[in-house]
Image (tube, rainbow over all chains, first blue to last red; front, side):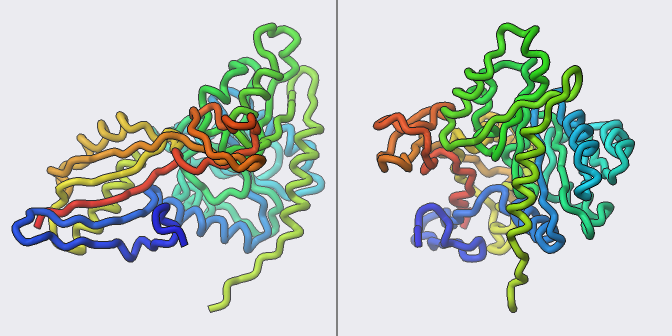
Length: 252
Length: 110
């Protein structure tokens, strides 16, 4: 196994060099991911989701890109067919959770105070108020921010990042970490494209392509001329993939 | 701040086990990790107070971004927002360096 990237070295076995006679310091080689504790809790969350056969999606974007509006429209379209719930992350207020509950599905609000992202422990605490039994789909709406949420695994299966056409088509080039971590990019508010002459979807797609991989980009609009068919189709395909997977508990 | 806090918890545990104060901490932070080195240093200067890291220095190693092309196999050094193959221009690549976010080494006072 690789000895330099750390993948084969457990945190419990740091390599230690004793101080030579006369030396004032000794060195401990560690090779542990900085967010190892967050990763551990995220893995625990993922096990909960898998045990209940729930597909968990982490929804990220800058503030105001339309995450909650997209969720409202999604719930309206799918709630007859799938059991959906939402964990909402915001610095303050439970406005978003109330909007989701108004659609008739359970929502738990996490208020982070000053923290600009959710972490695995915050999601874990929220799961205590969110019965997973019987759910098909759990959305975790992250705090609006294109920087920090990308670094914290929450235990989700998929990352979706929204880019609204009122932002800039070079956002993937400016925030490569979050867009590179995305399994899908949703170009939102596309009904405004006709009145915005400086946003070119092709340029956004090109900037995304430059980050390597083949992350798909789909268009949505939920207000003036609603159009979320491509998004719903993608979601249903992910749910089918999920159901093909069976949870097998590890034997002891 | 969250990253710094996680770092201090990890390092404090290592130092406590060995009953020693921390002289230096070395971390690897790639440009694609999403963590800014300058901000981490700033947070560290404030947050190290009061524990066994109070006088420790934080050393940050930064690797450049490298991708391996899944089409032609070439490795190329590139930029954070241009993760395509320099050799063939292919966009199906895997990042092989530059996304590190790792505690590498702790030096303890003897």
